[in-house]
Every structure is written in structure tokens, then in C-alpha cells.
Amino acid sequence: MSKIQETSHQLDSSISRIMETSFLAELICPQCGIQISKSIGLSACIVRHTCPRCSFVIRPRPGEGCIFSSYGSVGYPLNTFNPTRCLPQHGERVHVVVGTSPFNSYYSESRLTALLLWAYEHFEQVGVFIPDTPTVWTLEAGGYTPEQASYKTKRQLRYHSNKIGRAREAVDAVTRRIGLLPWSSVAQYGSYAAAEVRCRAAFAADSEFRRECLAA
Image (cartoon, rainbow, N blue to C red; front, side, top):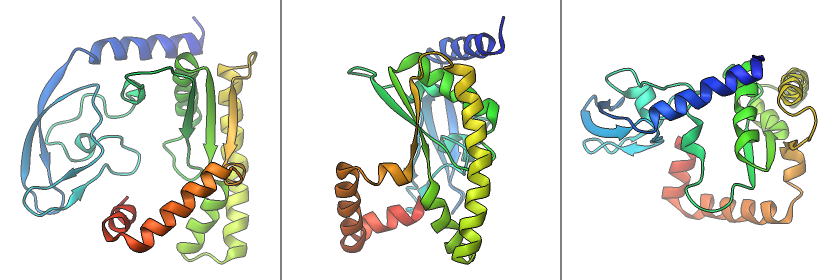
């Protein structure tokens, strides 16, 4: 059995096991410490919850997909990779975009391979999003000069792109159904530009929307 086939078999086994299971967990608010009881299915992914005591918006820690992974009172049974939560319940599975981050160690080559394998098996077309320009902005916001941020981003993107390239080759060496979507290309799309204008307007005018963005 090849490494790719073994990974696929492991994912299928995990998916079959979790789809029929649920459990009772205690969510602990990181702000005030209150415990919130909730029964959830293992195939569920809860990405936010407003604390009933202090109104703090609880979100997963970086690299974790569910708030119960981050702040559950017991270990979340599948706290690293549960792709079934991302499948649409209705409609055709035509195109999916897999997000990545060049400075996040979560996106190791093995993780990228597993993500792309799952996407490849469930969708007709797969795009891999690469935040090239936004990464420069993030570093500048962290105190780097524009020159330093640009250099550091280019160096890390080369390393990141090489990992993605090897993962693509391992999963899809023949049909080439997995493509790259750098932000600098996506930003040229008219629909994206229009959506960005709406988001910027909402950020400026809607205090609740702005608060949610800054908390993300």
C-alpha cells in the first residue's frame, strides 16, 4: 500500500467512525471561566460561541478548528483533522479552495498532502490559496519595515510553495485538477474586488462587523 493510499484509508476510517458519534462536553470560557455544557456530534465544527455570562466571543486557538478543541474541559476526540465538517450538505461539489499560511507550522508537507488528497477525492476542482501580499502586510503590522517584510515573505513563500508543489505532485501528478490561487491573482477578479469594497465599507460603518473582524 502506497503512502497516499494509506493516508486515504486512515481518513476514510476516521470519517466512518465519527459520523455516528456524539458526546457531552463542557466548554470553558477563557475570559470568565464559566463552564457551558453542550452535546455535540464529532462531525460538528463549532467555530464561535458567545459566553452567556460575560458576552466574550469564544473562538478556536490558531491551528485548531473548533472551540471545543481549544477550550473543552475534556480532550476533543478529533482535534486535528476532521474534513467531513467542510463538505456541503446540498448541491454539487464542484470547486473547493484550501487555505494555507506560509508562517503557520500547521501546514506541514504531510498536512498539506492530507488536505489536498481529501479535497481531490471530493471535488472536481481544487484551488490552493496562497496569501502572498497579505503576508507582507501582516509582517509590516508586526513591526517589520516594508523592505524586511517583503524579503521575509518572499523567502518563506518559496519554502511554502515547494511544500505545496510536492503535495500536489503526490496527490495529482496526472490530471492536474489542483491549481494555485495566490492572493495577488485573486485580487484581480472583479467579483472579489466588489466584495472587498463592500467589506471595507461595512468595516468602516458597522461597529459589530468591525468588532468581529478584529476578534477573528
